[in-house]
Image (cartoon, rainbow, N blue to C red):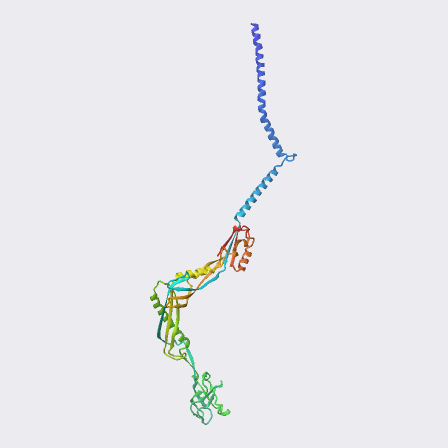
Length: 428
């Protein structure tokens, strides 16, 4: 029994020691696993120390990195702005172009059956019409008829005896106009008597206003006692009468001519019909007679007239097409039409032959042109680097434009960009 107890007591320590030996290696295996995090912490601490210790030899300060980053951002932003600038910068040049007249004038042939492309289909007609027409004077024309002025005077005698005056006794006005008594008279002493006097010379000088007359045939002392006065103006020296003047005769003749031409045109058009819209006339006055002379008094007068009206009727649309083609032939390079006066196309008969049914007409068609986009004067390369004022001075000085304005974008730009495809021309 004693041995068993001792045996059991010895086992206990053995188990304990065995357990301790086995646990020791277990601690060694776990120790390396815990070293890794410890080292990481040390590394982190070293980095943190480096960021803080900027004065340590070999270390790169954080501000350098920041400057590098800011420089990079600035360069990128500058490049982006440059790209945006180049993509958006532009200049629009508004040009009020100078209008230049252009005229096409040529002779076209009119035939019943056109042969050439420049010929026009048409026909020729002619007719004569005459008439006598009576006109009444308007009273607007007047003329002065010269005569002898006459009037009545009162003869005064302040002497104590009568004064006899024979016919043709002279009376003189203050203006020096001489009159003569029509009949002999005797002026009673201290009394008066009326008598008729006539101007010595015809004309308007005898139409004097009321005045006092002396009698130059009497002595100077007697002239103060025997004299004449007039209470009314003398008349008859010049008389204005209504007459038919040359202007009125011409106006009456023109009125009659217009009526005859209108009637003749209507008759010729009725004969031709409405197929040929174009028409041109030649009028000649064969006879013109007035029943009175110019500046004659008359209650009425007659005008006799005969006119011949020759008409050329033609294809208006075809002639207009030829005229426009002539205009385009004369259009210069770098020009374009802004207006063609088709309604104002003039067609005048130059020659005609009624029997052959052919005629020559002078055609005139006018248009207005302006400078076009293709003009060398508006080549965009000319304006590169110019200011708005320089562009205006150039184009106005050359006569290309009457006014010029330039719009720049962006707003701070004040010269035309060097990128030609960013320059735009607007013709107004």
